[in-house]
Amino acid sequence: MNAAERQNKIVELVMAQGGTSIPELCELFDISEMTARRDLTELDRQGLLRRVHGGAVSNLGRSYEPPFPIRASKNQSAKVAIGLKAAELVFDGDSIALDVGTTTLEIVPGLVEKRNLTIVTSCLQIANLVVDKLSLEVNARLILTGGIVRPRELSMIGSIPEQIYRDLHVDKAFIGIGGISLEDGLTEFSMEDAHVKKMLIHCANEKIIVVDGSKFGVTTFANVGPLNLVTRIITDESAPPGIVAEIRKKGVDVIIAR
Image (cartoon, rainbow, N blue to C red):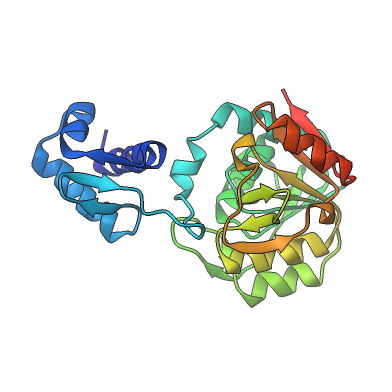
């Protein structure tokens, strides 16, 4: 395990437990105290945790978004199931928008048998996977929105993607989200991402949230909109049944991917 992989695991550990200690890290990763201190100092510098005497504690507020690689490793089987279920809603000839996100990323493999799609995205991770998995001559025409690239996330934000989505009309938009709450609706970690998602929702005939069950009952930093702004939500079996039932009462279709 290299240093980057180990540091990702340390952040996951701190997020799960609320903190960790130098001895715990030494035992878990078979590293020296000096290496453990160096890892924690680097992660503190990046703002991913808070270094304290003898270890580290969580430093996460509502605007903190875990790095893409860390999110991608969580609830992976659920995200694959959600992605495949979402791909079933795409038909030959559809124009679709794929939002940034580790769950929207899992839609792409399910599109390999589709034909004549138009795929619009503001996510370089998704664009790269489309190029890798699909034929741009047979499966899909790929459109990137452009914009300011967020480091680590590799999504594009700012006025350029907002304007692109404002000028388009797509059949379906598949949208990732930071939190789903009965009280606060749909929320996102950053204001910039929230603005892009609002335009993405605006441009789509069908507005489809793809999200694993861990996002239910969560409120993050920036408002995206009320729950009834979207057509349906695709999630997995870990979604809280009570919240799912209340969302359905609001007229939003909720599909459970199994």
